[in-house]
Length: 126
Image (cartoon, rainbow, N blue to C red; front, top):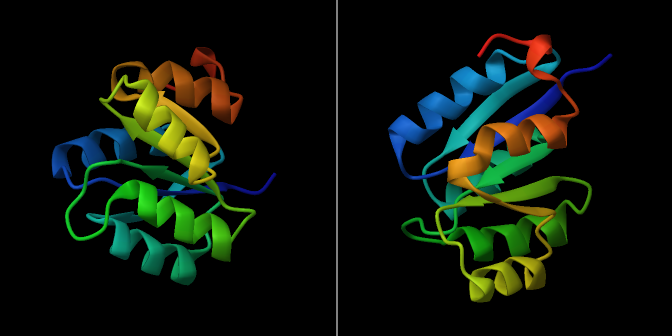
C-alpha cells in the first residue's frame, strides 16, 4: 500500500509540529512538507504533489482560502482539508466556494483526521 502524502500549511510552528508528529505516527501516512502561508502552500503542492493538504484559513501573505482555490484549480485531485478554529458558517461557505474537500475544527482535528484517513486508534500510538 502506498503512503498518503500530506502537506501541512499553517503559520503556527507549534501546531505544525504537533500535527506532523501525530500524522507520522499513523502507518502509511507521511508528512512531505510544511508551509507557513498560502503562497508557500501552492509552491509546495507544485513541488511535492501531496495527496492531502491540511490548510489553515488565516495566514500571512495569502490566506488559506485563496491558496485552496488555486490548488484545486491547478491540481484538482489533491484533497484540501481546511483546519481552523473558526466555527463560522461564513467561513464554511467560503471554503466550499474555494472547493475545499473538508472543513475541520482544530479542536476536533485528531478524530477527524483518523476518520478521513480511515485509521483506528489501535492502528497507531496516541
